[in-house]
Every structure is written in C-alpha cells, then in structure tokens.
Length: 81
Image (cartoon, rainbow, N blue to C red):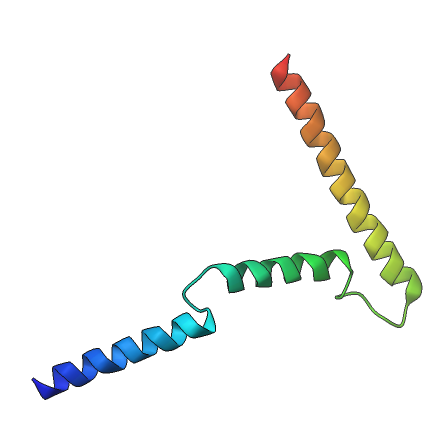
C-alpha cells in the first residue's frame, strides 16, 4: 500500500511540474511551429556568407507564398461561380 501511495504522489508531483513548465498545453508546440516557419522564410538554412543565395532563397520562398495565395484565390473563384 505504501508503494502505491508513493507512486501516486510522484505522479502528481510530475504532473504539477509539467503544468508549471507548460508541457501540458499546445502553446510550446505552436511556438516551435511558428519559429520553424519564421526561420524557413528568413532562410536561416541558407549559406550566410553568400548574399545572393540568402536573398535568392528569401525571394523564392516569398514568391512561392504569393503563388499559393493566387492559386487559392483562383480555386475559390472557380468553386464559387
């Protein structure tokens, strides 16, 4: 019986610690995803010493977003008519 009570206390303590650290909510996951998207469009993975590659990557990714928005707009227009 003592072991069961100790296990329950340890589990509650672990859950309390996770709750204080924010591990029980989706907020850290959302922050991580937002940071990942920001880093992708800021071209953090491109070579920092090559300005042409860095800005070319940023421009290409920006144009890709604009193309996606244009296609979504066009698709919505096709569906709504």
